[in-house]
Every structure is written in C-alpha cells, then in structure tokens.
Length: 153
Image (cartoon, rainbow, N blue to C red; front, side, top):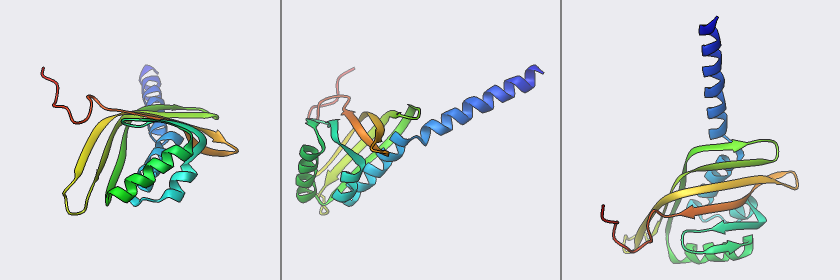
C-alpha cells in the first residue's frame, strides 16, 4: 500500500511540475521572445497589458507605450534580436500566473560589427485582463552591470 501511495504522490508532483512549466506566464514569455526575434510590434502589443511594469535590463518602463517606443528604437538600430526564457519554476491559479528562471537577450548587426549578449534572471507575472491573459509585470536583471568585467572570486 505504501508503495502505491508513494508512486501516486510522485506522479502528482511530477504532473504539477510539468503543468507549471507550461503556465500562461511561461507561454507568454516564449511568445514575447518570438515577437522580439521577429521584430513584430503587433504581437508585442497583444502580449502586454496597457499598464504593464517592465524592469528591463537597464531601465524601468511603466506602461506599454514607453516600452514599445524603446523596442522600436532597438529594432531600427539592430538587425538581429533574441530574447529567450528558460523557466526554473512558476505558480498559477485561475487569476494569476508567474514564471521565473534565466533569460538571454542578444542583439547585433548582421555583419557582426555590434553584437551583445546579456544573460540574467527573470520574473514574469501574467494575469487575465478583460478575459485575456497578458503580461502585467516583467523583471529582467543581470548578474553584474553590463560593460564591466566579471567579478573576481
């Protein structure tokens, strides 16, 4: 009996872990990364709540409009863009979804003259906004400030 109970609990925990990896915040983060890679502003607009708070790598954005203005400038300045999320975990219920883990943001020119890689940690929060799931908060942070050498251990 204890073996069956142990197997059942292990299966339940594994199912919950897999379900969190496929949560709304994780899915919206993946879609945001895809939209950034394609420089698709209409998709970015659809994924973010109007009053989204974004703590980007080096700047805070309160509301969708200033963040989209920043992204348009990035899209015009650089040919290549990549934003990918690798979730560690998350939590979700009927009204809120969270995801956290690591991210990689890369941008540059096709000819390779200006390429930057910024790895870090992220937290994404999604919620239902008018019956549609959207990102309401996104926080990206780097392990150390950009343009500085790695810390000495």
